[in-house]
Length: 92
Image (cartoon, rainbow, N blue to C red; front, top):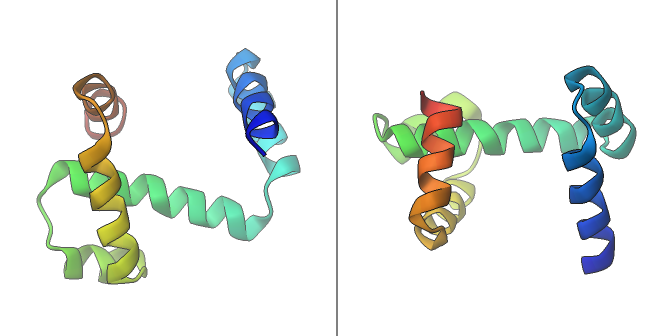
């Protein structure tokens, strides 16, 4: 499983064209997986902003409190460099 994940990350990293990357991700991910990944990004963005309660995020993104808690716990595990990167890319 790890070998496949590394190949996936490497393949995504090599692609410089957003259009080709989008096509690749549409090939590799089901519509449901694409939606889940999109919601995960929006969740991380909202958690980093810190402007909404978990209940508000759950309502707005139509996800469970448990998923929000997992996302929040995962954010506690990242280093400062990754937090800064996410703030720059998602929150701006």
